[in-house]
Length: 115
Length: 111
Image (cartoon, rainbow over the protein chains, first blue to last red):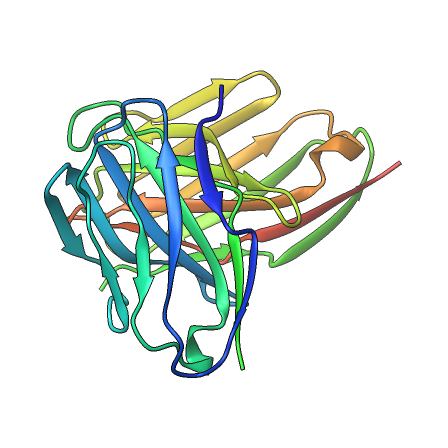
């Protein structure tokens, strides 16, 4: 009964390094998304996917890439880390989009620090 | 642009009190509104989802209402317990189908 699994839980990067945050769900959800949470700013949508092979940008997509080759996995890539990307990152999934069961399930988060 | 505001930012109450958390949004053209709970260092847990055609949803001691015309939602917690201490966030699904979050209300229920 794993739900949404994110790895790693913590990561420290140097400016300019690249890395991939992993997200996997075992609920056969069509919709997956990545958010970042910063103090006083709530959660902001980075990228989202409505199904395998389909991705789209959210509010704050710059500096991040995503892909969705399978229904289960939705990795987030930081191309060249910057201090402004220091944040807590959450992956979320739901069964479907418009008109379907939209209850969101969240992973436990990745705390990223960029020095 | 849709904006979601939650007031107060923090709330401290004694155990047993009934309390109301507020959420307001600037654009009434929404698909739905969700309330979430977040414990420190953890992800978010969905508590209640209200479709735009609905006025309220209930789950146990929680009741959420939605007034689209006034751009407001409230989360009512009955007979609060120390285990209810957490941050509560609301989020609206706006007309472009993006989920827009408020910054949350941090609740402390004192024994």
